[in-house]
Image 1 (cartoon, rainbow, N blue to C red):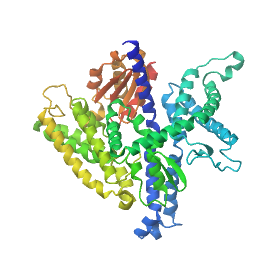
Image 2: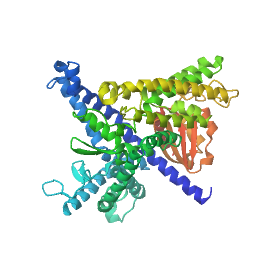
Image 3: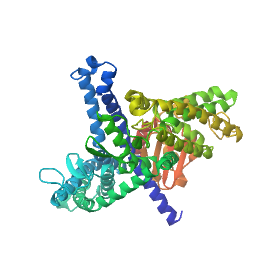
Length: 541
């Protein structure tokens, strides 16, 4: 590997690590959205009157108070995502002593915005009574954790998280003269972070208005590109799945002005998902914004209908003697996609053996986003578009707000489309999907194999951890351990030492190698595998 290739690998591994650090704050959104969705729906006066539920859910009842709490708790989480991102990214990017990194990020977040606030007061943008000056543009200044500051959204949180993590990784072992030794090591990190983020706050005061203008322009470009822009978003969101970079791509659209801005109840909201949940919480919302939902709703069609139909197509084209064996695996994967929107068990089934099928799937995904945009369907989501989110943000919110009834026709069309296209192409090109193999190259796992990791002898946690460590080239080749929803994500010194066959023989559904980053696909239980592996590595280190 020459120097240029090595630099490219390091950059990709860093971007990949940033992407997976986004996964922690994103994983908080389902519970926040669940609380907000249920609370808002069941305290909405229109809903209460429509179903004659005054006695049960009307003002003053115990359930009304309870659901109001649900709504406000969910709203509090969505309203404070910038600091949540700051802490989560700092945790995700820190190599060791992650708790110190989290504390430093929280402190730095307050320091940065307090610095900006002081400068805004000094230039007259914020007046003595807390009101805004006459020259301040709408939405340029907002309340961030109670501090009037520039509207930076989650970008501000990410900037804090990344910067603090870099300082943390550089200084958490910092040595100082003996007279100052109490402040050495991890205690030095929050000190240097505070000092640094005073200057970062000053810098953002000058440069963020320019960045803000650029973001609004970029968001406007996507919006003005209409249905083509919607297609590109949907296509790219799926196409980046194999590289684990889809979080990096869609989060800015969901959480910043790239996804649009809207004024809701007198407050300027930036980001598609933030707009949707602000509308969800507002009693004045008559119909949800399709311009916001264009970045979310498109996933329901292929997650709930298309990919389960593709799994059924793979079942139908399997050899008759293998159908019983392969049926359990495909049914489990299809049900997971339908209920929760976790699609990787199906997508990776055909990604590695027939990449062109995955490209076709990405095209269908882009078209799905366009159809939702065309049909004015607006069903929000917290994390992934399965049945749970569909019921919560579709039927429960009413057809007048969501136009959810129209999506049922798209579901039917997508189920038929995926089934016949996949069935035809698999048979036409004799693609070795599960149950069709003529050799042992494509391993077929039963449901129990998938669950238990198909270990060589007794199914103990340490055995799998030992196999993983051995397969990646030992402790000296391991740099970092992390995971997302379905993949164990490792950074190594030398990717050539990784034994892919050994990993596959012991339960891995697939391996992705890109530069110094290794992604081992295990499925939804990967978080347990990660925890066991971290403990095992700590024991053998």
